Length: 310
Length: 310
Image (cartoon, rainbow over all chains, first blue to last red; front, side):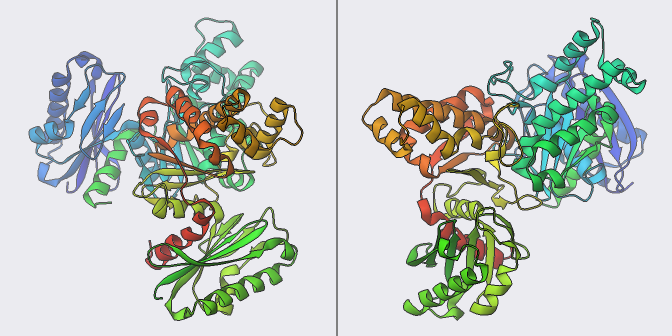
């Protein structure tokens, strides 16, 4: 196959690999358990290189036909220099010139990007954001992050840390956040907090969000109210970015987005009620389409953009 | 003079006109009282055209040497079509094809832009934002607005209404805002609210913000505390945009920025304390440099960008 891209999505527990064909489809996959290599940076890098080589050999792919490898990582990345500056959840990663290291081993161009930005690139070109120029791609999970497509390009910010929507304050006085701030959006709608709330509401210490969704699907009133209130909170947190950035779409991904049937209506009505009129009427709340594949498919967008010099 | 630009800044009370030389300096000026023409849209447009003609004749300028006229207006502008969609504070302006009307009368290319964006363009290229790629240019006045320079270009948003920083909520529950929202930043730091606060603090119904500044300059403790608290509020409102957009500079203009000596230190310390570490360390709070000229000088940036097709 000519002109394929390899996408790699590095997570705290798992590393996913995919071969992406020129049409944007993942045609071969493999994965690696990150945990086994935590605190062994060099071993993890070597294992990634071995996985790439195996994936190419097994699928009879020639490195001359590879446009490049795009790697999404959960932390602060310098995509210009190809350096991993810091990964908050994987110890030992500080100022690692990963691009140079892997290029030497694999002899294929390697490009790095923050994982949320990579997901955003994927959803923008191949998922729910296709054809749109101004979108916010938000992930609701343990953390709450976002990627910004502004004027038809990924906006990274001066220090490559733009998009921290989860750390925009929802209130001036609020729960302390690990980021050093107070009242951060994430402290209201991150999974940990939602689960805690659900346990209170249902008076069960092992209550999980999946169950709340299952109950909502059966029409359980407490569960429906839980998702409605969560949607209001999410909506409140989105009013600011909507008024500031005037996007056409907010693409919502992450575990909680599975409950979109119960969650999205109240996100929408909250934004409609509280955002400015032009911004509020223009913005659509849509569900992410690519799920866990977004981060891998995004690699294709990244590699092609860098190679085309855009 | 070859290659000059005419900048026009339309305000609720005044229309300012300036001839800008190729170096970016205003070399001739005139003005018009808007009030006399309120509810007389066509008369105002005609008066603007007469002012431009007079300005050119008096300064012996030939329209063939004019790169264009840039007009900043306080409201919703479609810069692509050259249409004034809506001016909240000047009645009767809805969907006015001002570009076409003036071009016909003046036979010079005319370009329209929102006034806050025009100020932002001016400060970016000729003022406090010179040389920087990612800045937020905020105006603290009766209203609180901002222009966004992102990746070295003015970001307007899909419907040309981006930058509404004054309508980002500071709290989920807060004072109702005329925009339809609740707890908007502007409702805490707009001039009206600040003056109201000052009157409470000083127990004087005619207390004005200029006086609070004068008192602060003399070391008055209540005045110093007033500005410190105002700075904290402003800082709280900027934490979200700083975390989301990761700019290098926030350029602060508007009347209140005259009290920068008392105001800025507490804006800075609040952002340092509450923003994320990379974003917080990177961002500088600086005072706007061009004052009321920013909106006129910005016209040069606008006209040249459009003519160069960027």
